[in-house]
Length: 242
Length: 242
Image 1 (cartoon, rainbow over the protein chains, first blue to last red):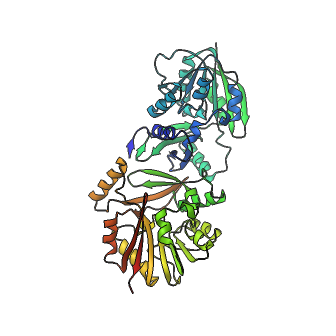
Image 2 (cartoon, helix red, strand yellow; image 1 turned 180 degrees about the vertical axis):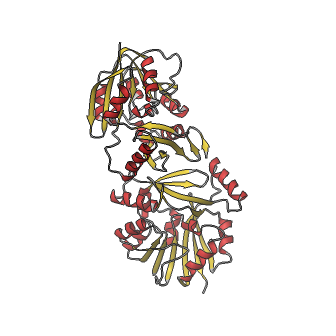
Image 3 (cartoon, each protein chain N blue to C red; image 1 turned 135 degrees about the vertical axis):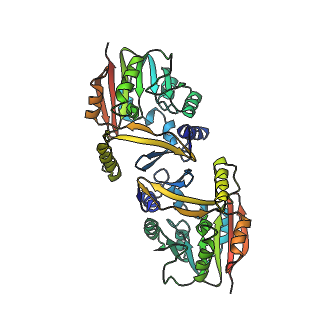
């Protein structure tokens, strides 16, 4: 197995096939050995396929927008096509390449270390469950501060996620228990993407409930405002203090 | 990770969804860390989706037929529906359960150890690339003898496969080299199926070229007859000596 941009390679393969289903799959391996598979075509869908809560929270989005963890540009490409001034950031070179081909001003970078010189934004997006990029209880304050650094006073952070406890899957519940035993948040998933002989480095992706997210945001420069729910999760508006 | 019938669980999930694509995926992990993904709907297709070489080699199939590694019954269910007297065998309890629901007289068993008392057959099938069930140069003679044991004199063994050397995939070519170094046939894939937190035991699945297959069959009770080729592989008819 070789360490590399497995995620980007999957997106590039799907993009080369016009984003159609049945061609390229993201295989997510969790550190308990759990394997999840998703058709990468899900990263190429349009506005109509955004969760209802995301559409509601994003209504009227304007000004300069930063899409963090933009992937293939599921959100950023839609916004750019609608005339929004949006910059995408992703740590995957393949994702950045695909997002650019799809009309996004995409740059290489992560939520913890945004690229230099990207300026200030009126809104920052952590959509597509990218509240997960908060990573852990340890890294969440770092990410929230880094995003605040590039947000204008009074600007907004829009994020979406899934409640990890909204499941009766025995394998997920066992993972929550194991995480508690080793001092991690229950929904803190240690993951890597695998594709062919390629695997990414392990990374933490955080699923949090509403009380957990409120506790993480409380000491940060952000204040929680609107909280939109739909059948599959939530989307939340945070405002940066002035 | 737990050892269990990951393959059967994927088939059961796909079957529960009416065999439609986009629901359940077989994730094959190779012992070099290579990951391959296939939509399990491919195990639920009909006669029209059999490779051309398989359709040609199976034309006029009659008498008692044994389908080895029948899976969800991609071949056996079609034959049973067409009035052929077919028995399916698979080591996966989940596969056997699904094949039965699809009208196949399916039993638990493997190519190396067929279930007791299944009687004698006029034709034995190793289709869907199940020449792979020969396993290795070591196990191939065992499997070929076991299949001969349940085949009537003059009966046939119909198998299909893919030439492992018909690729320019650098990851597959590197695996061939590694196999040669450790004294295995180049296309001898050590695999396990992973699904959620479940993984099967590792098993060997053998991809062989025409010269390799001829060499494996030569000392066996079988004689190679028709050799059908299509763009994607081959299907071969072997006859059991009288």
